[in-house]
Length: 409
Ligand SMILES: Cc1cc2nc3c(=O)[nH]c(=O)nc-3n(C[C@H](O)[C@H](O)[C@H](O)COP(=O)(O)OP(=O)(O)OC[C@H]3O[C@@H](n4cnc5c(N)ncnc54)[C@H](O)[C@@H]3O)c2cc1C
Image (cartoon, rainbow, N blue to C red; front, side, top):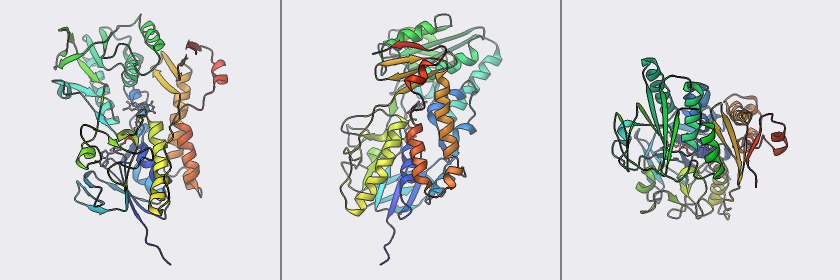
């Protein structure tokens, strides 16, 4: 007896959505919908600021990857999603029906409604954003005058951007950089020892850190702090905060006051059985870090659970695993954070680069790996392995010439 292929729609095709697509069997009719033609590797976009990386180097052809997985790519934006009637509509006017849907629309930048934030600050959440910042930096240097930069947010993105600006411009006369962080210390989500270490690393550079400091407004000329201080700024870079895409509430997958789509531990929506939500836009019963490695792991599980859902089989729970984090600080240092242990070495930058290089070369359409039979499984192993620095062991770390233990538990 011939079975009709079940229709699966995947909305958003970056880390989470593309992983799910690669893992889904060709037995299903899978359509990946994303407005952008390219997969973007976000963890290294800060390196565009120093021109260490080019935009092309951080992109892959999304249509070719989806095609090689045996599925269909639709370059379009989903504007309406109706999980209960299992239909969606795109900006391009297409109406699609589905048996199951995977929502992987990520997160947006968020200026928390601070006056002037969206108008005068530059985001750094995509390759296009990073290119715009790099162009502004070069234009300012060409003017040859003083260059005041304010970075809003002292989290990982803000610190990595600071490192790249320092890498390229720290010897430019007249440069001053202020990092404004609302939390009490830099990198609030990581061990406290990092705050002191970063401040020490910047002592001889024109960098000022303002922690525990809120921003009142942003203008074309600077940043106005809540305590009344005015900071002059020729370039305000906004790296703090995430906002949820509107589609989540419009579709009823996020119910106010919730802004992210709440899911069961199986990643199935709490509000629509046929819909699974993964990656940054998902709100699990116990929150997990909005990081690429979780998006990838959720993508894999969503592929398994969607197939099980369609077959009427019980679903599996998402079991997050703790992963080490690599924080690059330009050419000054790179930190490896594993739980409460923090190690530092310039040579660790090689590990971050290794993760990136291996991932991109194996994902690139037409790579040897992809053209092999059953590549999906092996490709997946690469994705999983490469999402975090398992390339590096503590034994390897001991061999690094400039290694430092910032904090060891
Ligand atoms: C500067 C920066 C540095 C980072 N560094 C790291 C790091 O070092 N390590 C780490 O693990 N993580 C890092 N992250 C976080 C990581 O990039 C995210 O966790 C990851 O991208 C989440 O994957 P995702 O697939 O859920 O969402 P995304 O990667 O954001 O993808 C969402 C996709 O959905 C598409 N989309 C959105 N709306 C629609 C719609 N309506 N219709 C169709 N498609 C839509 C978008 O075009 C996009 O392609 C970083 C993020 C940033 C911004």
